[in-house]
Amino acid sequence: MQYLISVIHDQAGLATPEEDAAIDVFNDRLRTEGHWVFAGGLASPSTATVIDNRGGEAMVTDGPFLESKEYLAGFWIIEAADLDAALTLAAEGSKACNRKVEVRPFL
Image 1 (cartoon, helix red, strand yellow):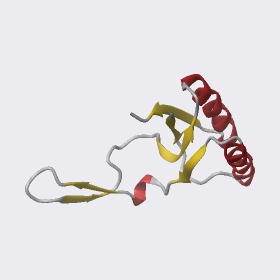
Image 2 (cartoon, helix red, strand yellow):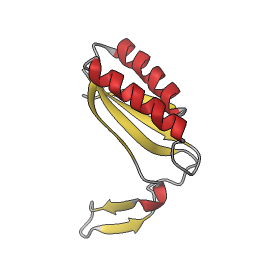
Image 3 (cartoon, helix red, strand yellow):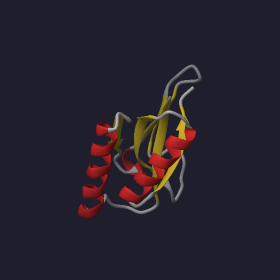
Image 4 (spheres, one colour):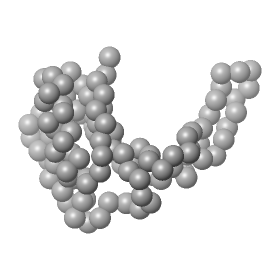
């Protein structure tokens, strides 16, 4: 089963060199153990563009969808046997990147 591990951050700025190194080690482990699907970091919310095309005309707005002190900073998509395995990996990812994470299964 696949899971999304969302990295949640509440500060401006990127990972420190130490955090980057720990993330690289964690990513290598995910690859070696067959859990890796995809991962990526995201630019700051100030670079976001929101598009709403539910009406007759697309509305394009600069900035994040929500104003919040916490934001999505990055993510992992992993393969895991079950939720318990995904949560164990997520805890290790949280430690590696030094940020909170959220785990959600794909349907």
